[in-house]
Length: 430
Ligand code: EPZ
Image (cartoon, rainbow, N blue to C red; front, side, top):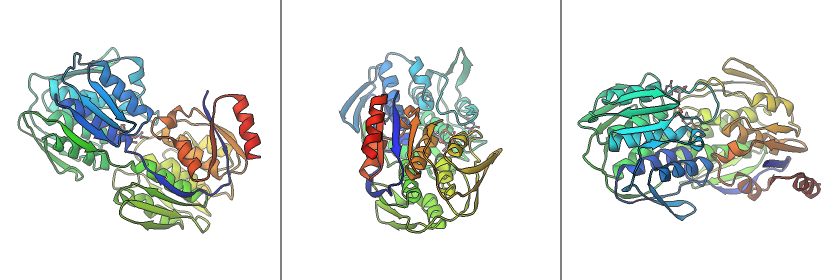
């Protein structure tokens, strides 16, 4: 079993290149099947979730040609099946984007019900509501969700909650529907804008992405395009907090600083220095960290996907901090692991009350999901002594070369698979 072995205590110093955004890539890959012409996509992160998505696309006849590690050419002119099935696809939540894209192109689709990180109830009622509003019959049964329409027709759709997934899925389904679709209370995340830009580059007519009202005028067809995916806001934020927690000095490169504003603001509040340039942000943690309060919110608020990372930092900050999770109700599972490392955190419902401690101590811990897994690695990098992190398959879902990028910043972290490798690591780090 793969594990990370980590010896804490080294401040992270240097520069790190941020990969393409996983959550944009997943939707954009699915949307690439909406034309029969060839689509070239650059800056695709090489992570488990994007690879599973491409495997699912290949299973229905899409030709996925990897030009290099981060560039793929996609041609969907030979799609022979509109059913996405298989145990592997249940592992990713984003499989549901194939429902929107296949429905939008072929007026019919069937996908096994989505899995993904276990961070709380993850209903898909808003996706279903949107597809139905466009005229599709939607059914759930035998572990699958199916949607079918004679002809999709534009409609006015009000989302009851701000949801990234349903906003992007309904956008794809509506792109070639007859007439105009208006999505109100739409999500404004950077990946929503990226998907809209991608679809527009294929000939779609989408306006308002990035605001809470998106207008989509149906077009009769989409054409091929060449497109580069935006940098990953959450990967960048994770390295920014890694700098803060290890008292380091890290420049995250190839980022869009605007997407990182809520993260930079909290780092400033707890005493870090932030320097921004056109496509990079430097975080210097020269002073002891101070406390703050934070509530996760849809963009441009503080992202739920950064909640475990900020909690790890506040666990080492002077004073009492409060973190409120308002998006997913089960996203504090990692706190037990952090407690094993010496943190003093009490969770009540969707709130964590954190009394900062002066240090974490190395422990044997398990990643409960993707972002919490990354946050625990950061905690281990700051801890006294050696830690091992199990179930790193979750981290590999969304972070490309995580341990290699950390090593490059001076972290003592190895990926080990055997006891022998673990012993070697112990000898190496002394
Ligand atoms: C996306 O999940 C991301 N996943 C998540 O990233 C991220 O945490 C989340 O957005 C919020 O930013 C992907 O993009 C693949 P939502 P998604 O629909 O689309 C409720 C990561 O670590 N809701 O925006 O599933 C839902 O329960 C992950 O990369 C409904 O009620 O999230 C939640 O409370 C994990 N009905 C809120 O909306 C619906 O039909 C936001 O969910 C859909 C959602």
